[in-house]
Image 1 (cartoon, helix red, strand yellow):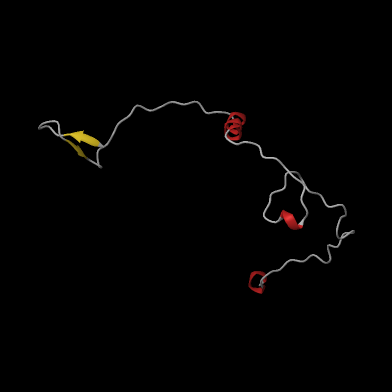
Image 2 (cartoon, rainbow, N blue to C red; image 1 turned 180 degrees about the vertical axis):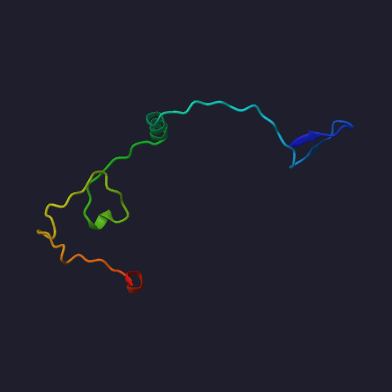
Length: 89
C-alpha cells in the first residue's frame, strides 16, 4: 500500500496499511453457466483409432466395454478381504 507522507508529496510503501473497500455484491451463477464458461476456454481435440500398444499415455475418447465378462460366472468365493488380526481381536 502506497501512502503519502504529510511533508511534501513523497510516497512511501506501508505494507501494514489497511485498505477499506466497499463490498462487491455478485450473483451466484448456476452450475450450467459455470460449466459453459469453463468449456468455452477449451478447444475440442480430435480423436483417432490406435492399437493398444500405441495407447500408452493417452486418454480414451469414449467409454470402453469388455466383450466378455471375466470370470464368466459369480466367483465370490474367490474374492476375499484382507484384515489385520489386531482389528479382529
